[in-house]
Length: 177
Ligand code: GDP
Ligand code: MG
Image (cartoon, rainbow, N blue to C red; front, side):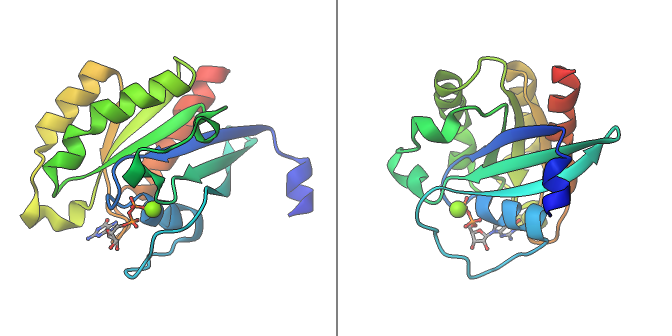
């Protein structure tokens, strides 16, 4: 680990945002530790996890912040967004209201972070296709209109979790070079 620390070429801060219950913490657990805990409870206090990946022979460390339940009170703080160069904005494909709140989250994000922040819109819980409430086309249209990348994921069965995080990281990498 310490050898690796010496060799970090880039550190990217990423924030997870979106309504409570959409699966942000499980997406992070899946990406960072390949875990899913069906009995996950709300965590207390701001937390982040790191994941180190190789990109173009460079060592990129992602520091990924998780809102730890504050989203319920619309109390995500300025410190949470500070220094972020990427965001995963997550909604639940089975709950249309979580999708309706995406533009509110975008406003908040753009108010608190760099205007050029790159955003991956993530429709999570795609394993629950029979309960789908948000059509893929509707999400694609929003992503296009707002200049976001888009992917549907499942933290439960791992679908697209790596592509969502790594896709965002590689877009950031390309944009800063
Ligand atoms: P957060 O509030 O956004 O951090 O959401 P959590 O990660 O705590 O997840 C909320 C609930 O949704 C938990 O009961 C999870 O087990 C469940 N969940 C999260 N991701 C998925 C998924 O991809 N598929 C399914 N079926 N359930 C999920
Ligand atoms: Mg959470």
